[in-house]
Image (tube, one colour):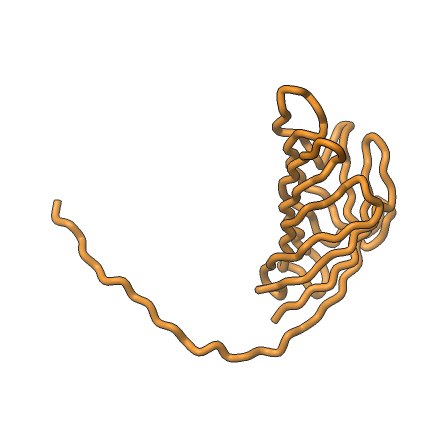
Length: 162
């Protein structure tokens, strides 16, 4: 067989400045931690069986209001790594895909530390797709409701995009 030779090709184009947009969003995340149809499932746990040393995957709905029967506007998919010796800290990678309204087909990506035991906290927006391409920003989280099987978190997101 004859080797194939090719040349490296690169072309740099000038970046045409586009106007930045700032979008503020408010919605609610609904995690179901148990029961028949959980949206959050543990896939790995350390040998010590501590819940603060585990990895979970999830696909949870996003709604316009805190009521679980509120209109669904998208879903959160991703991984959460629970780690911490003194307190439960969660490192999250979540992609929030929007399925309705002005941002239908777009998503926001979060990768950040989430001190889950605090009622109010902040996550970093590190990217996005569609109308949120090249997004950056932050989300202020407020735990609205929590018990053994359900979690409702209010998200107030400020995102800069083009």
